[in-house]
Amino acid sequence: QVQLVQSGAEVKKPGASVKVSCKASGYTLINHEIYWVRQAPGQRLEWMGWINPGNGNTKYSQKFQGRVTITRDASANTAYMDLKSLTFEDMAVYYCARNFRGLDPWGQGTLVTVSS
Amino acid sequence: QSALTQPASVSGSPGQSITISCTGTSSDVGAYNYVSWYQQHPGKAPKVMIYDVSDRPSGVSNRFSGSKSGNTASLTISGLQAEDEADYYCCSYTTSSTVVFGTGTKVTVL
Image 1 (cartoon, rainbow over the protein chains, first blue to last red):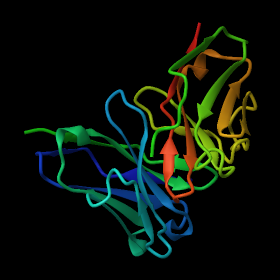
Image 2 (spheres, rainbow over the protein chains, first blue to last red):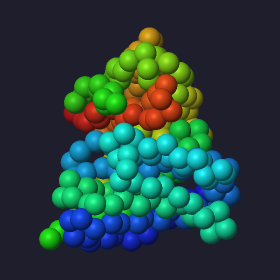
Image 3 (tube, rainbow over the protein chains, first blue to last red):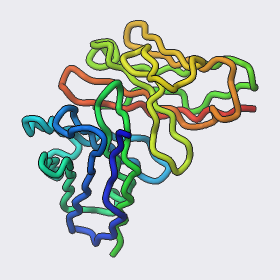
């Protein structure tokens, strides 16, 4: 079945970077855009950016412009989200999702904890 | 890009119908028929309930329906059931090729 499996939880210090992976199975990654969405504790969903895995084109939320980079490795059927210069406000669950008939499916989420 | 505006909470008794509104602008909700709705239970990943304003994915109950008028989209849940208690988010594509989510609505089944 179609699913997205994300990498495990991360603990980072302020100022560090984090890279989260999102491996697709049951379909070919390059056929559909991948979106990245985060959710801070008790807060709403927040869109970060998307990638067209077919050509590598990306679009980022203005809020994260310059700090986030979304890439893909088509041979590994995997997308990545790299967020740098982490602050305590970046502590959240990060999700990837396929853009097909809405965002479907979603990955299981990756908790990123920022702690000194 | 500001978040789309949703009521913080909506409640109803089992069997009743409720409607959640999602208000945006002519640059997002009003611009395209690319509004989707997501259900999220605590500690779980969101699940798509409606896409392209009113289309329902296979496997989603027909008790869920969507519509749009101008800059406001709506999600209606009819025949409210206990398992419908969750957070709901709307989402829209924008004229800047970005995406914006709503503020979220907590649905309580009384």
